[in-house]
Image 1 (tube, rainbow, N blue to C red):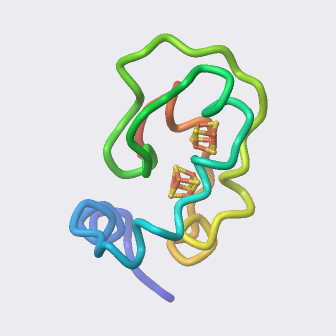
Image 2: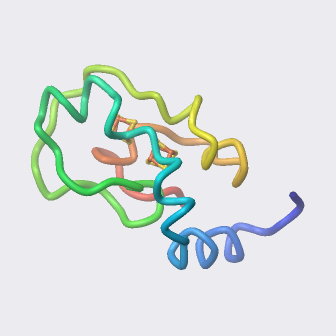
Length: 81
Ligand code: SF4
Ligand code: SF4
């Protein structure tokens, strides 16, 4: 897929329920350790809950691959810029 960053952001925010299900956050140690809620932090920004880093699986996520994301720990660092 060949899109610019602005297009990626718009695409992420308007993510479909099907794409939302692809998010792997619910399986990661950071998510479970910190009892996070919500998901798709790469699009919607960091969690309001202070969290400790315990590992991140974003690099293996279909969304990260599909949208060519370069970041990780979006739940702590905030959305992809
Ligand atoms: S952004 Fe990374 S560290 Fe945070 S919950 Fe998702 S997979 Fe886990
Ligand atoms: S890249 Fe990370 S935050 Fe974004 S949908 Fe995938 S697992 Fe969730």
